[in-house]
Length: 77
Image 1 (spheres, rainbow, N blue to C red):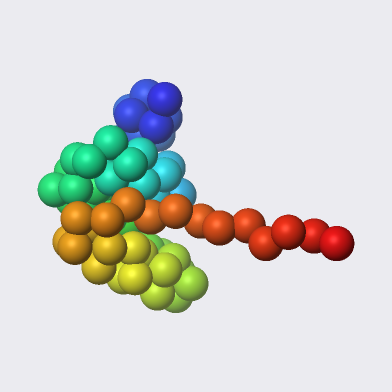
Image 2 (image 1 turned 90 degrees about the vertical axis):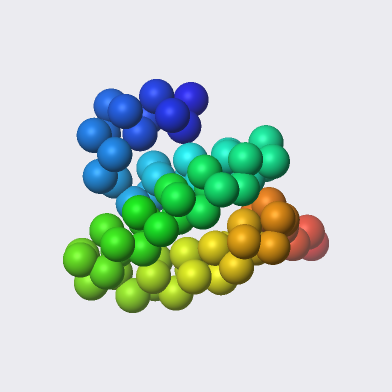
């Protein structure tokens, strides 16, 4: 689904690529995850999206170490 969303958006939507990179990493496709994340970094930099550039840098470090990105949720009382 993430690949389809990326295709529909022309490969130029940072959040879609961010999701695609996470999906690749979850499947153990770390080189593709890092490539997608690198594209996110480029797009976020061009768009001056500081939050996205900061986040993707941390995520890329995981992919380069062969680890997927997993967001944790805290329990609500």
